[in-house]
Length: 132
Image (cartoon, rainbow, N blue to C red; front, side, top):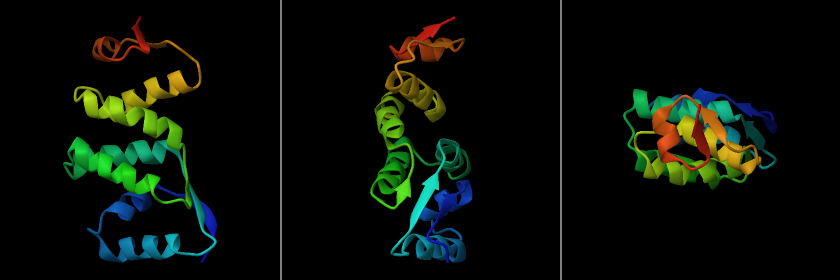
């Protein structure tokens, strides 16, 4: 088995869920390789959260548990600062999507403020955003 590569959305979801035991086992074995470093794109994490919310009806605290589980795995390489910054927004503002929280956090972390949006709800909730 390879000691590097990237994980797609399904593999990321299987890290946390054991709803398809064979797939969960294969991802778990992959991550247990002693030399393993695997990348996860921002898109795969955002999409994973969407799948957990819409497909599995996860609550925001359950999504938080999912992210904390990812953060605890040192052999996964992903944009931790953006997701750590987005999590408090996501938990504090139930009307906002995780994607919106990530966009605002990314703008803040990259000094690309404000985040311009047509989304009135987003512009009202987060100080990093301005309605166009």
